[in-house]
Length: 252
Image (cartoon, rainbow, N blue to C red):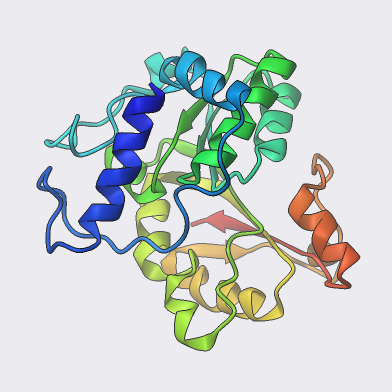
């Protein structure tokens, strides 16, 4: 499996120099890292032994060129489906799976080091209501049935602080409209960030994609959700004097 993941990373990187994916997939710019520091032996073990069994199904264009929809009812035995976009080291994803065993949750993360960290946390927690897509969330959106997601999370996404890079942020219509399509009417979308300009762009772009902001007063964006777990990214923000914001939206 780790060899397959290296192939996935290598193909994604080489595709950046061509006009089309060899699989026939439409070109999508991806900004960010696929791999960081050298993986530890136990992390390689997690990838080789655990990742394949946690797949949500055929997501990539190479294995699903016709973009057939996944059977989410079979995936989690009919339980409500939640989704986390960019799970980082996996703290929040595992916490939600453990806190709500009655739901099924899929985590998307293209950074393989983060995927390896998550797999270690899954082993430790022993959760079984969780699937992992080690790639671009947009490819997963392609193959999820319309209106199947009941709750989605975007926690401390890459801020891309330079103005010329703001189009790379997740909170653009390129990402938000496909997300909205797979979310059920009345479903909840949570966004946590410590970057004021990311808050601005979130408040500007998310409603355009068909979401309603649910805040009624300052506490609704200053205080975390009751089931929130503070991640390593949030702890870093607090140490560096930045203020977290917690925004909740409803799919209309």
